[in-house]
Image (cartoon, rainbow, N blue to C red; front, top):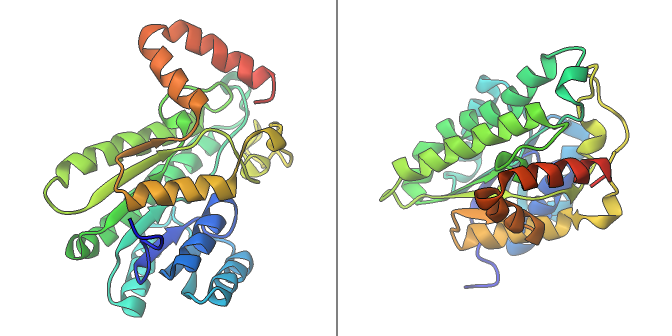
Length: 269
């Protein structure tokens, strides 16, 4: 496999202004990809686009709220207008939550998580699909290990990520023979600011991460593994030994996995 498998590929990347998305953008830029970067925060997104251009890539920043179907359609149209095609769509935009379900004071975060994490991916994929068919391209869905198993304090997030996994697993089957690959990435905990922006029990960002960020995978490493898997057109990426072991144990001892998950949250992992 070439060291720059995404050279000259037109890539649409959501959630590009921070965390995993930022590192995906920078690493794609270093490979010579043509980038259309999307996020709600225009200022931070612009800074990422500038950093990509400084690495020699063509990069355009498009302020986009993926919960808005019309905005997703406009994002795809902008990408096609700029580069004439779409070779790769990376659905990375996402939010999370951190509260036991019974302690929630409002259920609005459950709606928002579905709109952003699940429907945002559906909208972008729907409008990009005809272009991806023409290029025999790649779809990447950045889900989570929480999309494969329940995690306490993340019920709404787990629901939205399970929905993502179910949708993209089904789409992969529907697209057999089309030349399009569908890669679902399921990272474990990754050191990003996502948890500080997590919806709390009152529906507002909790402000600080409840996880010991220094003990978990970096966003840079996570992005590198996602791109390597996408380049190889892998169907699924479970990105930690703990995750792989947990999913295997879930098949034979699901009750044990439940207790391990609860203990991990109580330890701040």
